[in-house]
Image (cartoon, rainbow, N blue to C red):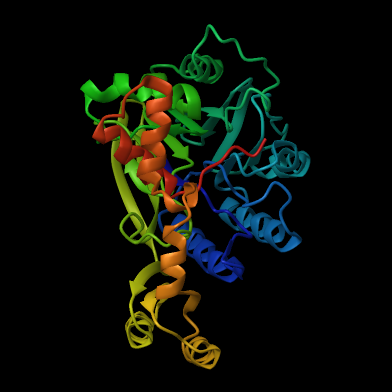
Length: 400
């Protein structure tokens, strides 16, 4: 069975008030073509379909048209779960129509409705229950999909028990679906959550408890479910979570932060599986714009970075200058349409800022160090700090 794993579309998002919808439309056409060319059986969208819990009509229209295309006239199952940016009920409301075509839009752990007539297609849903759905191809091959939309106590209508860690609770929620895994089925987990990458060393896990308990992170152990593949959303980079490399974040649909060190393009994942495990994995890049940030010390340098990066969106900060006129700024903006954000910090303004002490003047690393000292009495290990800083670039937050 071949699956396509994508996530974090964030349809309707803006970058400094610039709409990205047309870029998203183009990227989704690429995803549709990849799904057709690779002849995938199942498309998994692992949350954060929209950028807002109240998406625009244009964003919703783009989503519904895209999943219809991905469904390929009922020959490809599409499973989409809610992320923290999505309204679970709003997403699930369309299921009354979508399920009939093999499109399952899942906002909760409730069982999805299986259509009574689903014949004549190469793959169909044959069984469902709390937290899982069973798919079967015409050749008899079966897959159990255990799903967990963004795991929030509020969203799942449960009261938090302080005697149970968040990771243990996530493992419990996942078990509703994973308990239906079998030795002769392809077993897949899909969720939208935060966990640690495989780059973290074993001896640093204990130090991650501060983050886990205070920021809703999930221990790797909670995801060791026996699944042949685990499709995750939430982190906007394509990374493997475990050393076996069958637990993956696929990354976002388009680049969304001005941080080229962590976002060198976006991808979807194609995974081939059978009942013995993961046979093959392919990370297919999407042709999307990069977002690049530069700090320069003159107007000429600002012009050069805009000129030399015509196919990227540019954010420029000109600092430590005596004066730049409004006319010069207007000319730069009108000449280079790829310039999204321009800020100018004069020498006088910089001296004034030095006199003001606030969180805005602290780096993310300094803020994190202060937090850890307040919570534990000492700073965190360097690996933990690096993990936190990499995630801060994704601008993650809990919407409810």
